[in-house]
Image (cartoon, one colour):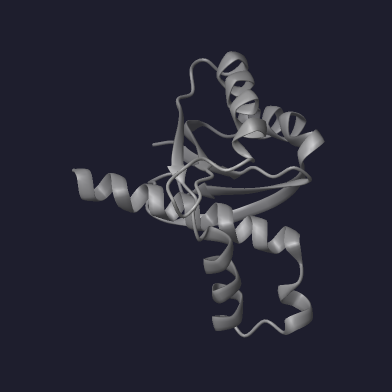
Length: 140
């Protein structure tokens, strides 16, 4: 099998997570400066087989799309154009940043380490991917 890749797209930084080849476990991969994201993806996708890219869908508490969707939609459109053979799916990212912070607290990270926004973004991408995989398993 091939991997799943998730993206927690941000204005400055983008968190990236991948699954194992059996698509059972999500792991944080890295955080990339958003302007370098397509270069990173080109390099990664050349080395690894990815069957689907999951992008965090930014929704507000009232279920409306957040302001960040104005940046995400053009990104996804470009992604689909460059990689038409790889499906791109959205997955609700509500609470992923809060869950990432709680994960860091539960993991015993000190307050200074929890202020590392790049780490928060990477963990958020991992949470998005794990949620996506779990929802897929539930549908089967």
